[in-house]
Length: 180
Image 1: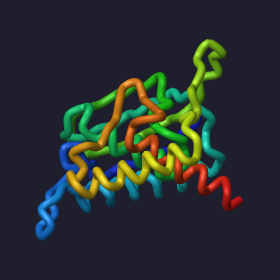
Image 2 (image 1 turned 180 degrees about the vertical axis):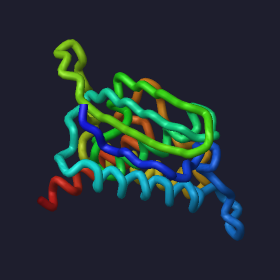
Image 3 (image 1 turned 30 degrees about the horizontal axis):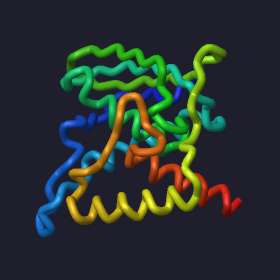
């Protein structure tokens, strides 16, 4: 496993602080604190690890100390690793270990590795045609605008053909591949 982050004194952000209501539009949106924490994790990841994106499937070890509950900072940490392109997508994490100390004097240590087990197969992409993907994206954007994010879909296990985040990532990936 590769050490990605090793930092002390970090101010953690809880997943409970992810969303806030826009003051004028009265719709849910990502909070500034959450976005700042994700960017910080991304910056720390890029500073601590200079290699290429690690191939999925992943195993991740996170060690923390904070006054937050064990699960609260985990989602923003994983999102930050994904933003920094350490992880392709946190949906590919097959083995997650968290060691948490409750207390003052915060620290965060993160290791990421891949699982070279031939028994584990990762379904890499959705199988929609370009036309079907474009239509799904149009529908998704319409629903997001009309209902303010209430129809956002995420499944466990991940559904690459229907989950909102997977659909948007797929169209971005395809566009990016066209521009290379």
